[in-house]
Length: 231
Image 1 (spheres, rainbow, N blue to C red):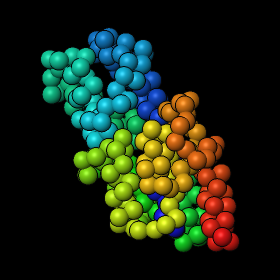
Image 2 (image 1 turned 90 degrees about the horizontal axis):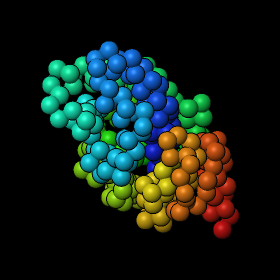
Image 3 (image 1 turned 135 degrees about the horizontal axis):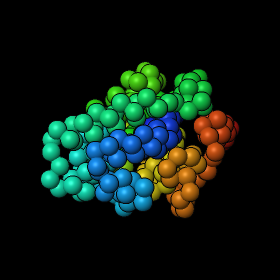
Image 4 (image 1 turned 180 degrees about the horizontal axis):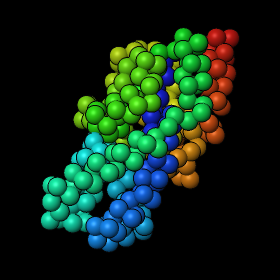
C-alpha cells in the first residue's frame, strides 16, 4: 500500500496560520505607510495568484518579494527583509498540526503503508514546516515541487512517488481537487479529499471520496484495503 499525502491544510493549519499572520500585519503595514499593501490583503487580491505554477515553487522570502514587488516595484531590499522576517516569525508562531494528523499517520504505519509527502513550495520552506511540526520521521520520502521543478498542477511529482515506491494499491489524501485529486486520477489511485482549509468551498471534480477530517480518511483507506484483501 502506498499513500501520498499533502501537507498544507491537510496535515497542518497553513491557511489559518496565514490568516492570523495577515491580521497581525495590519498595524505593521499601517505604521510603515504601506496602505496599498494593506488594501491588497483586505480585498483578497492574492486570490488571483492561486493558479500560478511559479508561486508553488517559491520559498517564503521569494513569495514575499513576488507579492510586494507587484504592489511596490521600487521597494528596497531592506524593506523586503523586514517584511519577510515579520511574516516568518508570526506564521510559525501559529502553525499547528491538526488534531487528527498524528493519529492518521500512526494509523497508516499500523497498516504497513508506505507514506510519501507530496507538497508544493520550496525545499527550505516545507522542510522547516516539517521540522517545526516534528513529523518528518513518518514519511518514507518527501517530494517537494521546489526540488523537482514541477508543481502539483502537473502529475510529475505523483508519478515520481509511484516510481520510487511501485504499488498497485495507491491512495492520495489532500485538500485541493485540481492538484491532489487530479494527481490521484492521473495515477488511477483512490483520491480522498479532506474538506478544510483555503480550498474547502471549491467544486470537486476528481475525488473518489470527500471527507471532513483525517479520521474519516483513514477509515476510507481501511475499508478500501479490506475490500481488496477480500477480492
